[in-house]
Image (cartoon, rainbow, N blue to C red; front, side, top):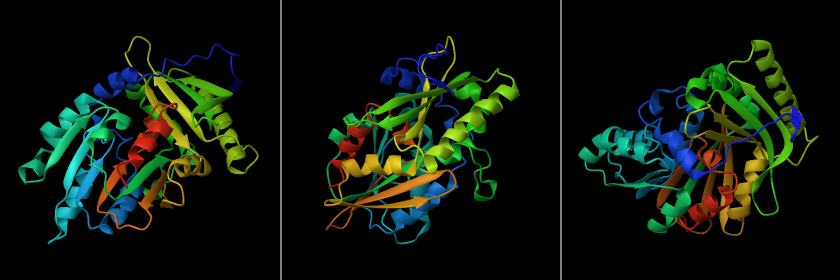
Length: 320
């Protein structure tokens, strides 16, 4: 671990274009990667939350190729005889991911008569094209603690740190870790405590970095440090376009971010915990939800740190 500026530590320029370049390149293999298939607890929480709603539509934001949401929700809906099949609005930042969802993974549902509208682009922009109505919002994020703690018995076989390094060919040869906190202007900013590791480093180095990050996480969890909202991870490979970005949140950090947008006078928020992370279920107060908005598998954590609050504000406009 180091303080800012002590070791030549450098982030790439965090831009939407860089994210598109990364996610476009993963459209052919996304649904088979272990980072996509190790979060059954989130899907179980999503099934439970969706079954409670007489659902007219499903709005999937950041759905990648659609192999999780809305695919598994639609399969669950079809499996229950007599249940009305909802309309779907499907979005992802990556045009190539959306194209693959349309041409392949979600095409069987279209063939069965499900009306699906495909909208590539940033969530904050495409929400302007979605009609507002009372909807239940399900936000799935990763828990900072789970970045260092696997739960094989719960379908989470490897902790995030080990999983990321093992998949460096996909995510990046070098990983930059930055502990970030929510500023007064609702931006996730560096606290100045950072680390970096390469997939080419010796195992002793990789283990030492993991141990130092985990020690910091324990201080955050026990309340010794209160200014941290998330661990930010950036993966990059020299000579390759784009970068991988993720945020693994503290429970208090993500709740503070969400509560700041979805205030208690207008919305209720319940939190469900599982092996890899958390699901925050947000309902408008005083009305019955007529649809569901899903933002799963840490999509909010993949949004640029300066845009997460803005993204949640855009989602707010389509659930009331």
